[in-house]
Image (tube, rainbow, N blue to C red; front, side):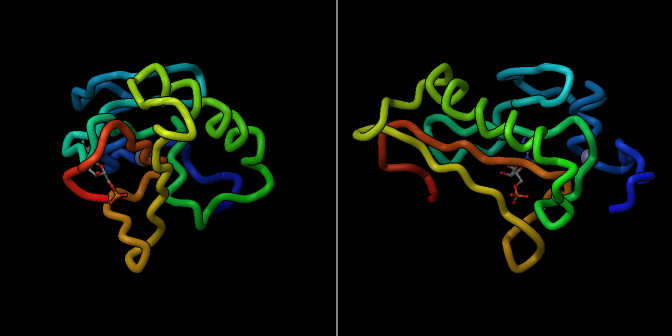
Length: 124
Ligand code: AMP
Ligand code: ZN
């Protein structure tokens, strides 16, 4: 992605969620990121953490995103516990980022799935 790439994509469902044009159940929000409940949860806890900037996938992430990625990774443990994941090591959670068609990515706005809670899960 060029440094002049637009930070929002008018056709992107997650950009529309960030803009509140599509409703979502918020988990967390700040200037850089938004987290919300997955509409089809696989696990008792299943939320998505996304950058507000439209980055299509991990394939576009580079050194210029290091601070943003660090911010997002540092939020995961805090948000996971707040949302009801059980403590490590008996509890825990899965952190999943599907990338590209062969990676199973369906929505092309970078997102981290955080899934946890007591098993069995619907999937995963
Ligand atoms: P992926 O296959 O990694 O691209 O996952 C996309 C995820 O977005 C799936 O788990 C969907 O259930 C979820 N999703 C799609 N649309 C919405 C929406 N409007 N609100 C919340 N989650 C959504
Ligand atoms: Zn987007």
